[in-house]
Structures are given as structure tokens and as C-alpha cells.
Length: 191
Image (cartoon, rainbow, N blue to C red; front, side, top):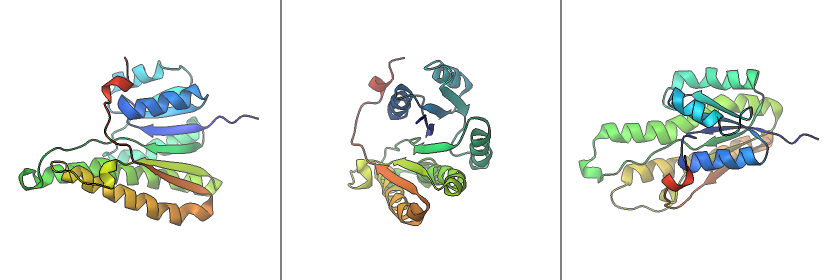
């Protein structure tokens, strides 16, 4: 019996996303990783040729997400696991941080994740199987001065994850939110 799954992981160029991808590849799964540059795709695909597939996709390019997911489903196979990892953390006190940075923070960390979820859900619902994993943060539970926009985005993704898990449970789809604490991302990618 073949237990190989197709993982779609956003933001696999380095850090936690690359670590998730490496673990899934080591377990024998196919991994489609999103990256923002073509050169990064080639680098990712060299990790395990035939099993690691890179696609250029910025999660804030909302119009590109549905076609990209449909193409993965059609040409690579059914997506079993979506890992919403792409994200970043704006640093700055709220009073001095422009609203444009708040929009950008939520575009990447919240709206990008939700757009990915909405693209994979119809396929998972039809199969009555799948797992959506949203990478949130301890900043989604506690706050710290200087990262208010980041914490707000991670609190939002925590709430969305919890609600979504209740909405899709009856369709055989699981939803998890992983909230890591602070860690150094450079050391997770030794290339």
C-alpha cells in the first residue's frame, strides 16, 4: 500500500518551511513548495529530484492562487496536506508603524493563508479527506511590545483555524494550528 501524500507548503525557501519540506521529503512524500523566485525553485527541486517541486507563487497574489492549486491537483496529484507557512513579522511600535505595514502584515500572514485554504478546500471536501496546517506563533497567544501588527495577524489566524476546524470536521478534513516560539531560522537551512 502506498502511503505517499502530496504536501503543499508555502514559503519553503528557508527556515521552518524548508524544515517541514525536508521532513516530508524524508518520509517519502511529494512536496510542492511555493517560493517567490525562479532560482529558489531550482534550488528547492534539487533537494530531492522527482519529489520536490517548486512553484513561483507569492501568497499575496490572490488571483494566482486558485489556478496554481488547480494545476497541482491536475498535474501532480491530490493535495493531502496544506501547510500555510509563508509569513513574516513586522517590527515597530503601533503608534509609529504605518497602516500600510498593517495591511501588508495581514495580506501575508492572514489573507494569503485564507486564500490558500479556500483554494484547496473544494478538492479536499470532494475527497472527504485532507489536513490544513496553519503556522501561527506564540505571538498568537501572548503579545510583546514592538510586534503588535504581527501578534494581531497571528491571533487572527489562530481564530480562523479554530473556526475552520469546526466547519470542515464533518467532511473528514482536519485543521491544526502550530504556534512555535521564537527560533533562529538561518540555521534550519544550511545551503
